[in-house]
Length: 433
Image 1 (tube, one colour):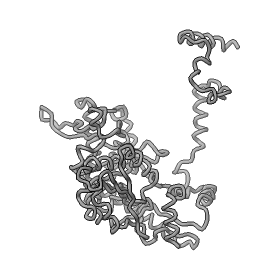
Image 2 (cartoon, one colour; image 1 turned 180 degrees about the vertical axis):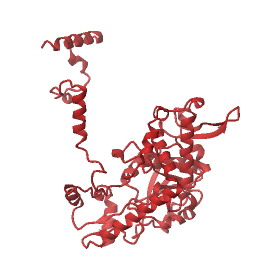
Image 3 (spheres, helix red, strand yellow; image 1 turned 60 degrees about the horizontal axis):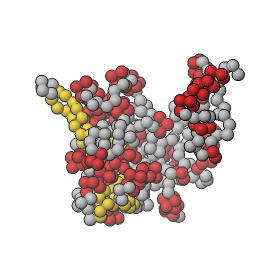
Image 4 (cartoon, one colour; image 1 turned 45 degrees about the vertical axis):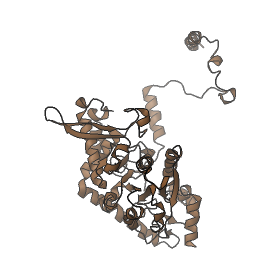
């Protein structure tokens, strides 16, 4: 009771200052039915040593992807990040840098951002790349709204975009969030029995503002037919392609087969899955979309003394320009994590990226062959080329098998029943029948 007296005195002092009588008056705006009826079961104060021991105990309950065999991916990849990436990224000049509003004192960070843009541009074979996005989903959504701003006046299907029906639901949900307020209509493009886009049917998208497809798609299928897509939809329709950036180590970059905007998850370079975030997205485009692209662009120039200099040359977010002229609400690009990605890409180089890509493709094929040898299991789309992801049809319930594997110390993968829409699930079942 003696320990509580000072606290009661401070509480009374606070209430007097606020002009209130009791602590209940302070919370009067909170409806009584949602107020906690009992005090929170908080522990007493702890020493630093006790806090550290508790933290280690709680964190020890987590299972790392490196602690057991893992086949879990579904968009975020388990990858090896060289130790030098973290060592360089946590240096003070990078770790404490934020927004380079004063270019004269931010040349190091600005150059690092410029190098990141250059690597992404070379990777996807498009001339312009921004400093990064939040993730692949916001990048895809921003690309679509960017395309609508550019093409809507010339479009015969105004305010209309087409997306592959195999776009993962979580990404499609973000796209819908971005487009619904703008009155943009989303229509789906169908796929053939081999899991590839129905190219002949894709002509219905001609004259729309944009088409969004992914290479590989959510089943890991590398779709060779996408090379024809741009010629089918025409130059007045923007082709937006979502990519697995590592796959570009051995397959043709989308910029070479007609993509106007390329987006994707950069997480494979520089950072692990990190429980779903923070991660970073990539965004690259042709010159036509430069003035309408989201985020920020760092440019290279020379100062008044003729020295090489870097500065922000395009900042279309509302913090930099008048709000009604902003093209994006991406307020903070993932600069530090993008820096980690550029360090990782620099360490790999073209040859290293090719080896990494080929290794993933080979391991995917090896796994596919082993699973195909088990009579009870069936590979979905067995005749298609896969990268990183494959879908497996089981004789029973997927969640039960994953629980069984988990009890044996194996992370078996992702239950597609939680991912797919009812329409796609029915389509897969009917295709097999």
